[in-house]
Length: 454
Ligand SMILES: NC(=[NH2+])NCCC[C@H](N)C(=O)O
Image (cartoon, rainbow, N blue to C red; front, side, top):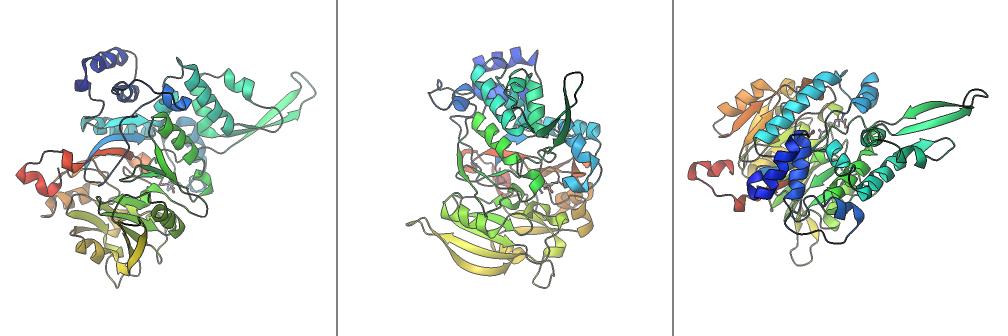
């Protein structure tokens, strides 16, 4: 597996040395970095200095394949503190306790690591190599500078003198400094406004990872739009190619996207992502799947069910979970599927079928559905994370029981307490971006494991 110590002796020594002074997230970033065999080639500075994952293309065919590398963002004190001052104005569900959120997120990262996933945090990616490599330092300074505005003077000098954590904090809170004359002491007086990235913890949403690679999205809410720039920077710093970027008038949020193999991908459109983004994905051939199902939410459009991953998830190659209330032709909240098919000759997608009810569509695709009660959905029962081979992380105990009792599900479910992160309106699926999964064709399969897609 990518970056595992066993890949080389040199790597394990590097990790051993680093572990004496660094946190696990640093280890994952540096381990992925060190795992590269090729010497750096001359490219953009970002990439030559921090060529993480270079020879390892980001790619994800199916959510039931083994997760290899995840990008997450730990709850950042400054931006969450500001977000927490007005939960609704920050797209949060309830007030948030940052200390508890940090502890719960640390547990989440540990759990991913115990399942063999390399977990890279946004802060560690931003800070990686910055102390030792001036190119990486200047790149980070430029990013910080682009987030810092002054009423009058420019911020170059301020930025160049900042420590790494100050630079990262500046990026997280996006400050504007307003200067007025004070006519005494230093002669000036400063007040501040901020546009904090209070939802960056949800690294699912700024991009999607398709069979073709990473496509940067465009977030619908004004509070979240600046997150894309930061994630784009991180992904490029990892040496991963971004294969496309959604442009105006498109809106694409990663919580709406589900890859279901090289044959099919789903995209929810409604409150957040829109049909213009779906069109761009097809026209620019960014999906890599033979078919594309656009799942229209026309009747619901509710913040409690803002993304497709709030009401649906794939837990094996033959089983999914779905909010009961959206199922069936008679449901007033039903989702409707338009199915597009790619012409292998021209690479163009064309509409094949229209307005199919979602539950019937996924059954027809060979999935059994475990129905999730509305009350459980509101407690984030649908927003599970599949680490591959039906190893599921859930935050909701009764629906986890329901899953393991179902004859259609043969996997494992780990239940964690994530209540302080769900205060911000998202759970474990929202809080992770798996940028690499091992294609199932490369994983040896035992007979009894076949149906779980291991
Ligand atoms: N993939 C998800 N469901 N993400 C949840 C995002 C929650 C965030 N507070 C928002 O409203 O945008």
